[in-house]
Length: 131
Image 1 (tube, rainbow, N blue to C red):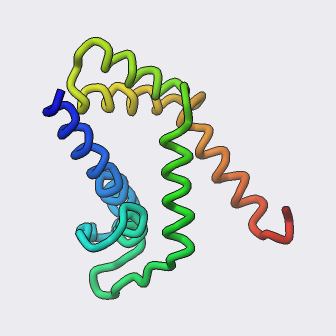
Image 2: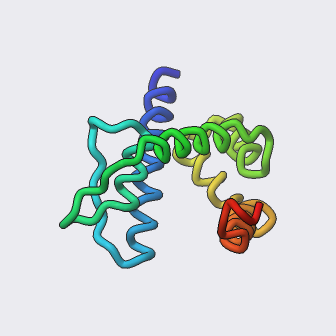
C-alpha cells in the first residue's frame, strides 16, 4: 500500500510535465523543464508557454484559474475514464497501468472529444462581450 501511494503521487506529479511535453512537441517547440520552486499549475503554464531564450512571466490570476480547472477535472466524478481507472485498480494493477487504461478510454470522441468541442465553442465565442 505505501509503494502504491508513492507511485500514485509520483504519477500525479508527472502529469503536467508529460502534457506540456506533448504540447510543445505538437507545436514544434523545445521542451522547457519544470522548476521545483513553482506550484503545480504555475509550473504547467510555464512549461507550456516559456521558450528557452525568453522567460515566461506567470500571471497569478491564470495560475489560480488553472489550479481550479485541475481541481474541477480531478473531481469529475464517474466519467468513462475514471470508471476505467477504478476498474483496472480494483484488479490490483499498478497505478501506471491503471492510468494507461484511463487514457486509452479518453481517446474516444464521446469522452475526450467533449473537451475539443468545448474549446471550439470558446473560440467561436471569442470575447466576453459575446457571452
